[in-house]
Image (cartoon, rainbow, N blue to C red; front, side, top):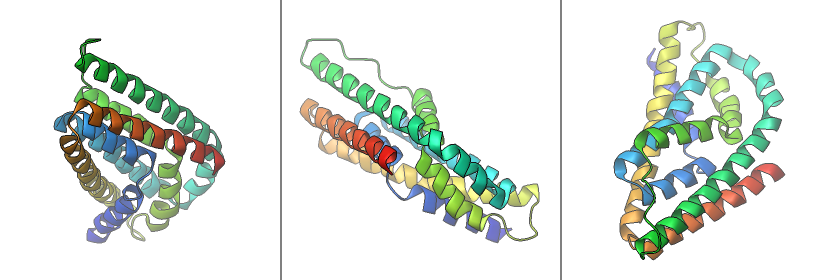
Amino acid sequence: MISDFASGAVAGLAVAMPIGAVGTYLIGLAARERTVTAAAAALGIASVDGAYAIVAALGGAGLQAVVRDVTGWLVWLAAIALVIVAARTLRMAVTRYRGQIGTYAEPRKLTPARAYANLFALTAINPATVVTFAAVVVGRSVSAGSASWVAVALFALGAFLASAIWQLLLAGSGNLLGRLLHGRRGQLGIAVCSAVIMLSLAVGVLLS
């Protein structure tokens, strides 16, 4: 059973550590929002990783065929989502910037619940997450002959905790960046860079 938890933790880190569209968005969000909001967003990502780990542990190698079937439309869905998120990030950043210099009222802050839901949804449709789980998690799965619910739960718990720790570290680094660039121009610059990176990743997703 310890091996199931360890396998889940290793798989969770393998999925979480490459910084792509979701990680970029999390860092940018953490630089602009409150610490509790960034932490909720990080847990939203980890929750998807834990859920995918459960599916992978139960489905085994048969998931590879399913992943091949859904990857095509997930690519388009993820690219559209990234463009929408990038546009919304820019719009909110510009509105907030103008609000701080007296042109408009500052928009409502993102709530932790909404941040959790947004990152959960974005991670769930991210092709990189799905494909990586197919390649890494399905290959590891739960230990041979250990298909009990306890083994599956330990595997998923390991993946969730490992991902959560990493995502919280990313959120912490984003929060530190926000503190260093706390002025309105610094915050606008962070948002613009984050949006540009997400747009670039959307193009990369379509071309990959």
